[in-house]
Image (cartoon, rainbow, N blue to C red; front, side):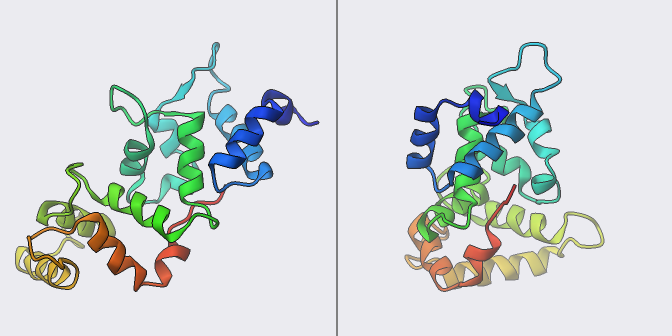
Length: 187
């Protein structure tokens, strides 16, 4: 077997296959890429700092890259660092094989900037700014932003409580066939 396969025991590889939407080859490639991120370290850490993850070409231009790291990180200090298992969870959720339910669940968590379980006006404003670019040239006026958030809530807020919860978000996403194909990261 190749170098990365010999570093990942068969039993562990089989377990990762069972617990993710990734193939054996994708897991081995992920393991290789993860190890490359730690190659300059004397004692390779069990966690890779967020800045190294953000430097990956697959994430470098994603406007939600920092949120992605924070959502998938199991770090107790909330620094966005990832273990190999965190990295696999991230890749699994963004894989072509992941279900709409999984993709929409993680998209919701990524867009929930304040981690309160709902998308409110503040979350929606940050979401729009991430998508449009938060510069003077691209930023919406206060009136445009207010109108856009009002429109989003009118379309999505089924129970009319002023926020979008996970089930409302998943309902909206289920009517958007392009969502699944655009929510992916491929190594």
